[in-house]
Length: 393
Ligand SMILES: Cc1ncc(COP(=O)(O)O)c(C=O)c1O
Picture (cartoon, rainbow, N blue to C red):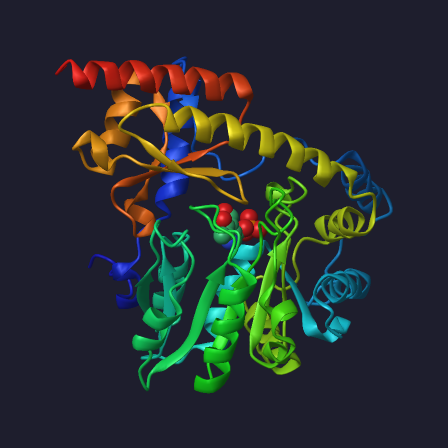
C-alpha cells in the first residue's frame, strides 16, 4: 500500500526560495555563468572571533548535550542584549536558543496556536510564515501592505480582519522580501491593537542589525513597553554575523511561552548544536565591528542595485531601508513575475526569486548579498533582456 502524507502537509510546499537558490547553484556547478541574486544569506565569512570560539569549544570537548534551552551564559547574553536595545528587564529564563530563527518561529507557532486559530500575516511575507501556521493547525490570514504606503502594515486593515478566532499577528521588520522597516508610529498602533484584542505578537527581527542610516530599526518592545506580556521577539546570529550554517536563533518572551516552546523543542531537536552556541556567544558579546563593516557594504550595494534597477524602464524598485533584498516591480513588462524570473534564468542566466511565493505576484526579489561586480553584470544583462523584449524578441 502506498504511504500517504499527513493532511496537515498537503497544503505545504517546500520553500520556493531555497529551491530556486538550489537551481541557480546547480547551473553554476554545471559551468554556466549564472549571476545569482537568490541568496538569503550574507556573502561574508563568519567573523574570525566567532569561528575561533567554535574551534575552542571543540578542542575543549564542549561537544555534548547542553540544556534544551541553551547554555546559561548564552541565554543571559541574549537577555542582556535585548534589555540594552529595548529597555526591557528580561532574564535568562525569558530566552530559548534554537537551531536558527526558523526553528524559533516554528516553536512559537507550535506552542501558541490551537487548531482553527487565525494568525494575521502581512504580505509581502517571508515564505515560511503561512506553512508554519498550517503546520500548527492554524489558518494564516493575509493582510496586504502596499508600496504606496511604504509596505508598512495597514493597522485598519489588520483590525478589520480580526475575528473571534484571531490569536496573533506576525511582524517582520526589516522585512524579507521588501526591506521595509516598520515605523515606531505603526508599531505603537499595532501594540495597542494587540493589547485591546488580546493577541500575541511574533516580532521577527532577524535583520534588525542590517538597517541603513538614516533609517533606524525599532522593536515593538521599545515603543510600547507593556507589549512584553504578549510579544515573542525572534532574532539570531544568522544574518547579522553571517552565521547561517551554524544554525543558532533565539526567542525572547514571557516565561510561560518560552517554557512551552522549550517543551516543543525538548521533543524535537533538544539543544541547538553545542559548539555553535559557543560561537554565537562570542559573536554577540565580542567586537561588533564585523557587523558594522558588513552593514557598510550592504548599504553601498543597496544604493547600486536600487538606483540601477530604477534606471531600467519599465522596472521600478522599492528602496529597502534594511535587510539585503531589492524588491522590484516587473508589472511594466506586461508579463507575470514567474514568467519574467523564468525567462531571466533561461535566456540570460540571471537567478532571482519571483514574488509569488511571498504573496506578491508582479514583483521579483533580488538579493544584494553578492559582489558589486555581480550586481553590475546582472544589471547589464537585465538591460539587454529588456532591450530584446521591447524589440519584440
Ligand atoms: C524573515 C526571516 N526570518 C527568519 C529567517 C530564518 O533565519 P535562520 O537562518 O536563523 O533560521 C529568515 C531566513 O531567511 C528570514 O528571512
